[in-house]
Image (cartoon, rainbow, N blue to C red; front, side, top):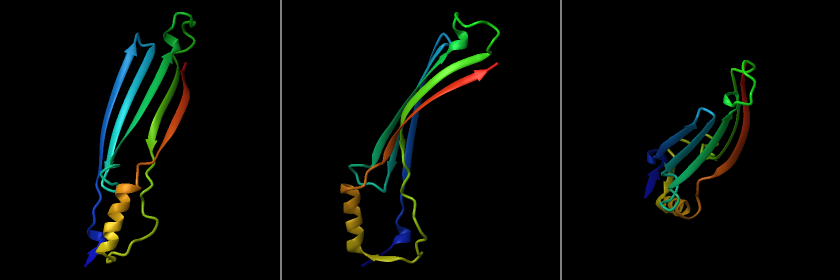
Length: 131
C-alpha cells in the first residue's frame, strides 16, 4: 500500500505564561514559560518547556543617583532556553510523492525513539539610558 505524503499533516501547539514582579519601581523581575508541542516528534518527546528569566535594576530611582542627570537608567540581564526551529524542508517536495507503508512506519518509529526538541541557552545583558 502506498501513502501520499501531501496528506500527512503536522501540528504545532504553544502555550505561554509570563509573571512580572516589580519592587518599588527599582527591581523588576520577569519569569516566562513556554510549552511547545509538535506532532513531528514521538509521544515521548512531543512536548518541551522553555523557561526564561529577566532581571532589571532601575538605578535612576535609587537615592544615591544625582537627580536630573538621567530620566531613566536601568541595568538588565536575562537568561532563557530557546527552541531551535530546524524542521523546515531543505528543498521542494513533489506534490505526488508516494512511499511504501513500511517506510511510513519506520518514520514513526524514528520519531518515537530519536527525534527531540533542540534548544539553546541564551544570556543577555543591557543598559537602558534616557536623559
